[in-house]
Image (cartoon, rainbow, N blue to C red; front, side, top):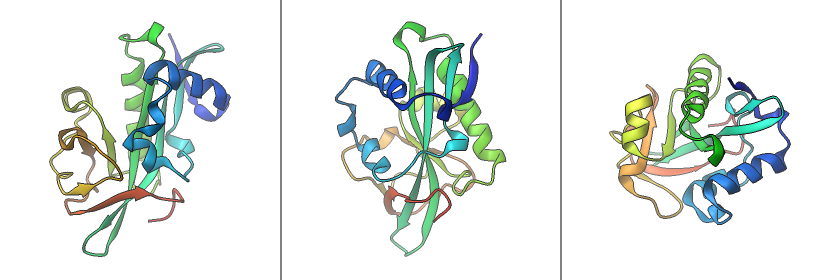
Length: 173
């Protein structure tokens, strides 16, 4: 059985190697990475799965905001990347990491913790966690994305038009 630990306990180069193995070295050009530019992952929500010193998976969560067309700014949390070592996939590591991050977001005092978002497979994230695209249809992101893959979860998810942007501080709107 694996343990979920704070990602801060894992050397950053080991996380990068895991992400390369899971998503490829060309992953930095994806739209989700543009939402992470210039910000630091939220420590309380970012976790690693490990057995002893062996890194099996990781999840990182990032502060973002919806800069709405009506002038309001709504803090949210970008969930991901969720990475699992190719040698350890399909045993529930990704689901355990995601469940733990969602639970921590809901029980913590984290700005945007009640408005989680991600870009991912709607069947998977809907079935296991309840993410939907119901309120994301008018959101704009800084790069290409498939609208049906822009998903959100939580009572604070805004149902309004606007630009999703990096949020420099996890505490700021």
